[in-house]
Amino acid sequence: MVRTKWLDRWALLTPSKIGVKDDISGKQYTYAEMSAIANRISHALIDEYGISYGDRIAVLSMNSIEYLFLYFAVQQIGAILVPINYRLAPREIEYILGDCNAKLLVLQEHFREVADHLALSSTTQQVLLLSSKTEISLAGIISDASIPPTPLAIDVRFESPCMILYTSGTTGKPKGALITNEMIFWNSINTEMRLNITSDDISLTFAPFFHTGGWHVLTTPFLHHGATIIFLNSFDAERIVELCDAENVTVLFGVPTMMKMMSETALFERTTFDSVRFAIVGGEPMPMPQIELWQKKGVPIRQGYGLTEVGPNCFSLPENDAIRKKGSIGFPNFYIDTRIVNDAGIDVGTNEPGELLLKSPVVTPGYWNNWKATEEAIRDGWFHTGDIVRKDEEGYFYVVDRKKDMFISGAENIYPAEIEHFLYSHPKVSEVAVIGVPDSQWGEVGKAFVVVRAGEQLTVEELKEFCSGQLAKFKIPKYFEFIPKLPKGDSGKILKRALINLQQHSHF
Image 1 (cartoon, helix red, strand yellow):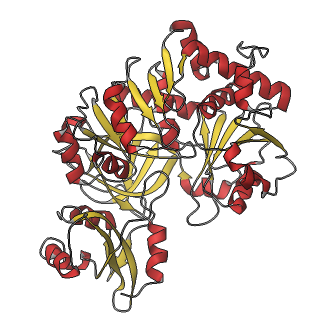
Image 2 (image 1 turned 45 degrees about the horizontal axis):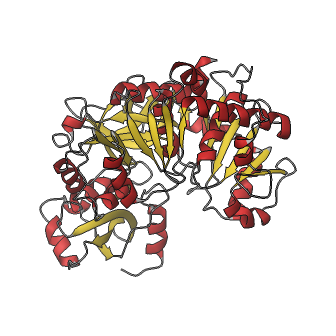
Image 3 (image 1 turned 90 degrees about the vertical axis):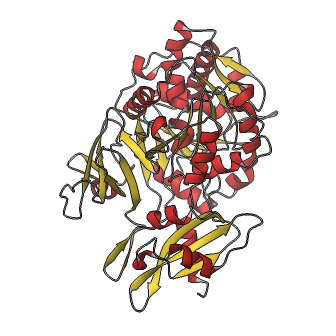
């Protein structure tokens, strides 16, 4: 099916166009070369490893160019790629391998010692190294001229899963979100229509492949549209800033933490960013000082919103509204329907907070081997995000908070994101996160974890005075704790679960 054979089609239309530049090796790959490589891997997976339609192929690896090509090879077989977070403990990796019942584990040499401690299931007995000088490897398959580079005659169904992305599992066992060919196709269409992507665009790929952002914020949409990506194996703030001018990058992507780290590099002031039309920012709201800083460099910030199970490119704020509608995630993308409902499932009015529901061809069909979680998340065709949002008079959406992050203090619903947004406006605050903690009088009260800007001094009394009269009394955190840095995941998002664990072992 043409809708799943992007590389083959671009190899026919623009065979000599550069699709990927590997910043690690310096190699460039045309669409014709990428198509041949993916086809060669597909033949080897079928002939040497017995992979067939629907089989799961797990990957334990950091980002690599071979990993990228593997995805397209797996997709055109009709098999399913299962990226695994390489920071997980062996027990957690074993759970994922067993849950998805993987037939093959593709392993980076760096994680061989981890794999040696895994109790592989009876199904996952086959292991293929990503690269090796002495053993059969994916890199060796790519360079083996004896393997045919011809397309496979397999009709891959549009609605079939091609990937399973496991959630972090902070509230229980990880859930494997099914990602279908249809979801990836429509996410790409939505992205192109809102960001005006063309084959002349250039972007950077560096987010980890076990995270949806690594694949589907810009990587798959760019390759679907015949554009060019610069491939990095990890986030390197200095190198990314350098590449913006060196490679004439047109669209930049990062979570707020990454954008902040880029802005703090020595190269930032000397870089023009002349080619960058805008930066896509998601994961969490970007602090206003950072929006203004990038705006001064001529890089408007397009805040966005999405989930692993939906999209992930669901909302986008037009770049000319970055200042006027600060904090907004903008409008839903073209092929996405929305509702905002209260706890009774009734649609709320303008500027009233409620849970965001989404309906679209980019919504997951469910969770692998977990019908209970599927039925809880998808009801009457609507995906329940668990995020609290509001919509203003002009139709702009704002994330108020995660439903699970909300806490109740004296019968008042408290949304930490609102308090965090205000505290970020203090000139001495570098980072902040607010959680609810137990309180004998009010049930729960707020506690703010604050990172002070380098070279500055700040006291609890100063912060309380700053909040006084600016926030309702019940919203002002009762406790403030200064810490050197906030705990973050590999995607750069703040890990509030880690803060909850931290406060349980501290005294206020």
